[in-house]
Length: 143
Image 1 (cartoon, one colour):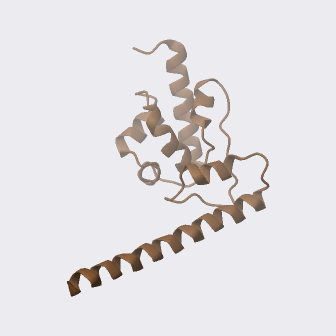
Image 2 (cartoon, rainbow, N blue to C red):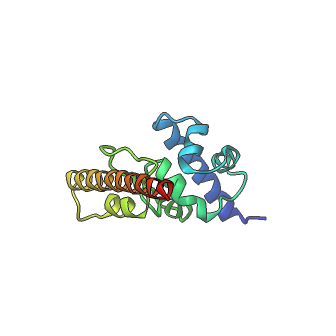
């Protein structure tokens, strides 16, 4: 059973998560989907009824446009770090993009330009991989 400090931290986290979700105009279902977690897990998080596994933190932070480490900060009595809103998060947000989003040496304009370049590179890579697959299929068909 969690102690009072832990319980209070979960309650505080739940309140912050719900408030931020509503601020972003997300339904609980959409937020859970963006975080890559079950809808019930999201509800438990908001209600503070169960402790959320740490491996879910990154997805929740991404869905709420918080910098990595924000959930731990809240649980420790601190504040979440809100990411710049000029670059909406996407499903392809990962460690590479999180690194750009959270680097304090970058301006918002620099972040936006770098993330756009990363996404463009990924689209080129996808297109090249698709073309390679088509070539392999043709080779195997010819036998």
